[in-house]
Image 1: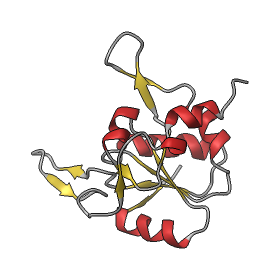
Image 2: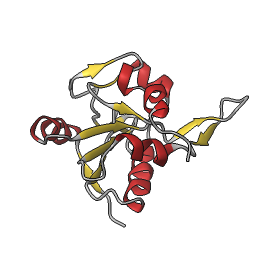
Image 3: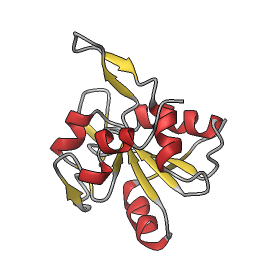
Length: 149
C-alpha cells in the first residue's frame, strides 16, 4: 500500500487551505509536550511499557483515532523524523482512512548516515509550534473520548 509523503512546508499550507484537515502527531506524550506543530492532535503510536522505559505498541491507537478524526478528513501524520508516522499512516489506511499522508521529515527532520540533518523538519523550517500537553488536543483528552468497546 502506498502512503503519500508530503514535506512540512506543503503540510502547513494545506492545513490552512483545507477545511477540516488534521495534523496527527504520533510521538509520545513527553515528546509532544516539549513542542509540536500548532494545532496538532496527539495520539501516540507507541507508549512506554508498564514499569519500564521501553517503547510498546499503543494498542488503543486506532480506537482513539476513529473516535476523534472523521474518516473523510485529510490527515497529515507526523512524528520526529517520519518513520513512526509512516507506520501509523499505514494502520489508518488499513482501517478506512483514504486521505492520509506521512509528513516526510517530521518535526525534527531526517538525519543522514553520519547523524547530520539531511532534510529539515517542521521545527527547522520555523513553522508554527506550540508546547505543553495541548489541552483538548492531548492524548489524555482524546483517549477519554474513545470509550472501550
